[in-house]
Amino acid sequence: MQKISCSLCISTYNRPSALALCLESVLTQSELPDEIIIGDDGSETETKELVEKFIETSPIPVIHIWHPDDGFRLSTIRNKSFAKATSEYIIQVDGDVILHKHFIKDHIRFARRGTFVCGGRSLLSASLTKEIISNKSYRGISLFSTELSKKYNAIHNILLSRLNYLFQRGKQQYKYVLGANMSFWKSDILEINGYNESFKGWGKEDNELAIRLCNAGVKIRLIKFAGIIYHLYHAEASRDNIEQNEKQLQESINNNFTFVQNGVSSYL
Image (cartoon, rainbow, N blue to C red):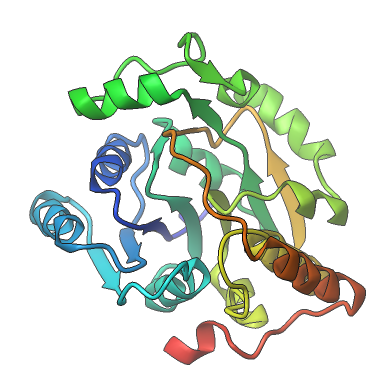
């Protein structure tokens, strides 16, 4: 089987201590991506300095994309990252997660034409997150960590993941999509024009992207027992605009939308 070229897109905002751990976990992968694209939603200079140092030591190319802080514009910075990606396959995570050592390998393993992949996450407690950030080390995190919730998302077993892959399918699975753990073919993302930048604030932009991919005939696959990430604790984002975002999601469902005008094409 021909090797698939892969871009890892990491989104971040003003949390360099978490991003540093995320980037460290990338470099310890059993299979490295072909490039790393850091999409920065307006962070201050500390993040820029961190990324510049990382670029100096990274064995693979790194691109840092930044735009001014103008509120929560995750969809926009992700679109800008997609536009810069040079690989045929894109894996997307957030900058406040730690990747299991086989994370990239797992996503590539399940890459199939005509499909996109969504994984889950395990959650680190506030106290464990504080300890990890203070020590600048995540070594020792595992299924058996006492302050880890959603432990079922931390089980790594390739046989079980392959069996689960056969059953975790169907358009309705869009409800369970997490933007912090997704992968897709760049050609499919361009076909639907990426994220809908009409979404303001936190919530539902990932589900809306997923439903448009499904509407376009790209089948969703949920992976369990593989593609594992550990999410560093933070307070929940404001949900002030969730009602409007839910409405936009429902419009895409009801009208079988596939393409949006204000998407990634603006940056190509």
